[in-house]
Length: 423
Image (cartoon, rainbow, N blue to C red; front, top):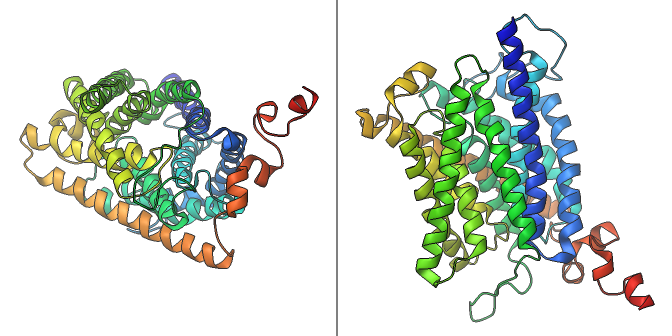
C-alpha cells in the first residue's frame, strides 16, 4: 500500500512537470515568433489546453485505453475518473491525468504549423478534432494495446506517439496555410523572419528540459525499483548530446555558434531519447542525442530549401528527430530492458537482428502517415467550410495580437500605444 501511494505521488509529480512544459512552449514559441504575435501565442496555448483537457477526459482516454475496442481504437471508459483506489497500481484519476498531459503536448506541437498566420477559430476546431480523431488513435496503436503494440513497437515515452504525431499534423497545417508573408522572395530565396526574443526561447527550452524528467521519468509509473532515476539519467545525457552536437554542426557549417541551432539541439536530444529512454544504456543515450543534434541542423535547412515555413522548427525537432529516436530503439535496445518491460525485442547492436528495427520503421511510417493524412483532410475541409484557415493579409501584417485579440502582448512597444502618444 505504501509503495503504491509513492507510485501515485511520483506520477502526479510527473504530471505537473509535463503540464508545466506548456509554459516552456509558450516562451519557446513566443520568443521564436515576432513581437506582434506574442500575446496570441501565449493565449492560444492556454485556451487550447482547456479544450484538450475536456476532450481527453470525455473521449480521448476511452479511445486509447477503453477495453471494448479493437486493433484500431479503444472503446469505453468515457468521461472517466473516480475516487477509487484498490491499494495497488495507479488510481484511475492519476492515470487519466498523466495520459492527458501527453495529449496536450502533442496538440501544442501540432499548432506550431499554424504559427503567425491562422485564425483563432481554426485552433478551436482543430483542437477538438485532433483530440478525438488523431492523437488517441496513434496512442492506442502503440500504448493502448492496438496493432503496433501487438508487434512489439517500442516507444517508452512518445517519440512517435507524441512528437511525430504532433509534427505530422503541423506539417499538414504548414502546407495548407502556406508560408508567412515575406518569408520567400520571387527568386526563391528566403528571408529570416527572426523571433523577437532569444532569451525567452532559451528559458522555454530550459523549462522543457526540466519538464522532460516528468515526461520520461514519470513513464516508469513507479518508484519501487529506482528505474525512474536511470531513465532520468538517459534523458539528461541525450539532451546534452543534442546540444553539443547541434552547436558543433552549426559552427562547422557557418563559423558561428548559432543560438537557435543550439537550442534546437537540446530539444532534439530530448525528443530523440524519449522513445529509447527506458531501453538503452547511458553511452547509447549520448550517441542518440549526438546524432539527433546533427540531424536537426540539416533538417531545418532541408525544410527551408523546400519552402516549408516552420518558424518554431517543430517539423525538424519533433518530426525528423522523432523518427530517429524511434528507430534508435531498433539499434540500441538492450535485451535485459526490453524483456524486463516485456516490450519488443533487443536492437540490432545487441544481437536482435533487424526485427525490432523493422517494427520501429513500420510504426514510424504508419503512424506518421495516419497523422498527416487525417490532419490534412480535416484542415482542408475546415479551410473550405470556414472560407479559409488563414487571416487576411492586412491582419497578418498587423499581427494576430491586435487582429484576433484586440490588444498587443507588448502594448507599450507597439505603434500607436498610449505611452508613445503621451511622449
